[in-house]
Image (cartoon, one colour):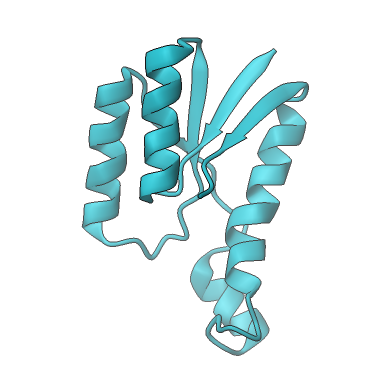
Amino acid sequence: MKHIVALSGGKDSTALALRLAEVEPQDYIYVCTPTGKELPEMFAHWLKLGEMLGKPILPVMAQQSFDTQIQMYNTLPNSRMRWCTRELKIVPMKQFLLVNAPCVHYVGLR
């Protein structure tokens, strides 16, 4: 059974990954779903976190880029059109989980 830890880059998923590694060490697969528009600091965080966890963080990318999605939806993501979360994060993660099924998927939420 594969154990997949989703990392957003925020404090909740970071704390989850560090705590799991501390109290329940296993051969975790750490993944993030970058949009392609992250600041360099986000990638620096994922790199440092991967070093702390002793494993690289695997990026799971959408099939179509953020820029392509903007052209398709003809708008930036906003509170009424949250296509960014769905298309660039949820859909690619679901596809990754299906390819790696059966698995346990860990998500850090407050």
